[in-house]
Length: 400
Image (cartoon, rainbow, N blue to C red; front, side, top):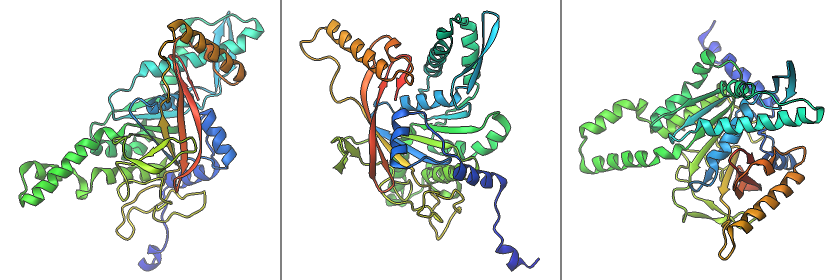
């Protein structure tokens, strides 16, 4: 075959073809009630391969939202439970998919996730069996179900931006050898952890250039970075590769480094949007339209963007950006007794349980104080606000 003719034939791997089909045919739900309802009303569905960025102040609820996403993804669709010498097939309604959690913070708590999964199972099994007069399963039965769910979870803990990029890049190869279920979601928690180290390396390099010297530590660092590219750009290329091959839903959390650095516009509820410490050209921004090489303006964003076009580094579009805001007023107010606060909490919990009947997971039964009134503001490309929803966090459950 003539080489010139062969060079015009487009090559596409099977994984890339499957990923494109998944994106065009699959409209996954997050099971985050407020978010799914908002996107449905706005006519903005999520697709396989979409990237959602979460940003907020420390302890605002970003990682907690990831725990919820992980719990609903690893839950089985139907559970087989032995009760009173009979095996019940109980609808659970989970995704029953593999979750990859990339923990950049070193604070991932598997017990926290197990608690959420167990509570969800107990509540749903109780709702199925109680009206039928069926007894409760043994704790060992519930433990076995929790273990089955957690077997779909895989945790990676990189310690630098370069390790993070390598981890994401090699996920497709790892998945082919290790995962049994479909990879549904990748949760990248706290990539901001590496920002200060990256900033330090940049400042050191600038200082070396200014001094006209090249110390040993700079030469060593250069040998560790492929092609001399910044690790953040390597991470962008790795995420683009992951979207092209496996097309999971990808959620990435970042801190707000400078709370005083806010954008001019406010949300519809008067809440601030924060400036990014990562931005173009090294990192995509929700404020700009999709600039992925080869991308189109329609909703079916192609996943097969080329590696490098016209000298531009490959990136990926952000499908959504979620800014997480903690509650604006404290639970304890001056001059109010603790028993009055607890009474108000129990009353509001009963009201929510009544309002969410048939949909919630037993808010009133999640004993103890929680964190309520967390507001999550959603924007789509161009920085256009889609809306917001509220989230509440309790010891055993997260209400979204």
